[in-house]
Length: 224
Image (cartoon, rainbow, N blue to C red; front, side, top):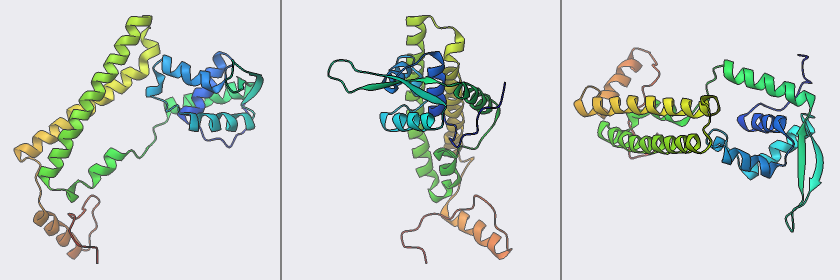
């Protein structure tokens, strides 16, 4: 495979989705959105009109896709149909292989919040994590329902729902881990209070040591 033309476009799930769909057949952005929703793929790629159309325009400006025709249905606005270029096909393959191979820190919210857990009391942390368990349980149930529905309706092979299988495995793993933390807090195996934390931090400060994760509890007044 020859190297595709260099592009300044940053690969993302959305831009990769556009290239992959157009590799199947020419279509307009609204059709891309409908196809992703019908296939249940909108659970892994955020497909919104406000972000999809600009992404299509950037890909066209970079020469990775190109307009084919403009069509109109009834009184609806004109819609531009796009097709993928040869550079677009090669770029899509490069992006896909990199996303499969490379491990990247995506800086998601939950690990960040966990790193500041000492700001809450142990009972407060337990309550919030218990609420997260409820939300995780609902997400697991919803994903199973969607996956089972697609399987029943289309008799899809495993390959075409592999991303849902991964999502479910990650959700179930997180549910099990959060459950264990909630249980440890409840049993006192994971315990802390403001006095303990301040003693730890002050002791380290006196020793001239800075340790990651040693946040102080929140106080009522402003920071000095």
